[in-house]
Length: 161
Image (tube, rainbow, N blue to C red; front, top):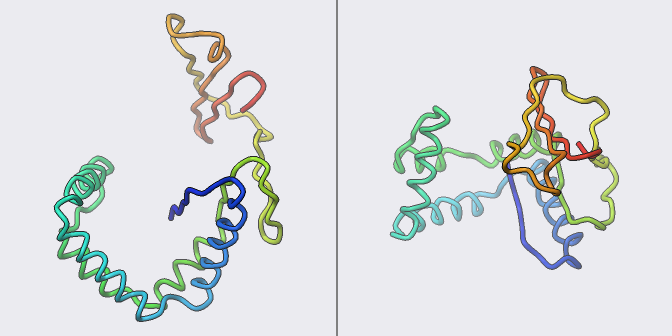
């Protein structure tokens, strides 16, 4: 699950806290019947809007590229209608255990179950290194290296990985 918001820097902590609070509430109580019905109505309204066709086509192309099953709008609507408040509760509880918060620099830490994400991983990934082609190197990217290995991927720029 990915959730994002755009806000002024001075509101970042408020928005972050609201997201976490809502996710925690969903993980504890699930969604109400009113919220589920509102989502169904919104889905139907969006599908009737001709402007949504481009987004739908982009989504279907992405699903095809990753080999996912392609659902028709009718199938997706049936699946959406079948979601219960308990389903939302279970899904929110599952994702809240691995939540990663990305906030602007300088935002105060949230604390509790959240820990700062290490900017520099302790161990370098071993694997094949890729550099910017010589003809495209400049002062900004001359030290950039992408390492792809069996245990992961690392991008390193100078001393930062």
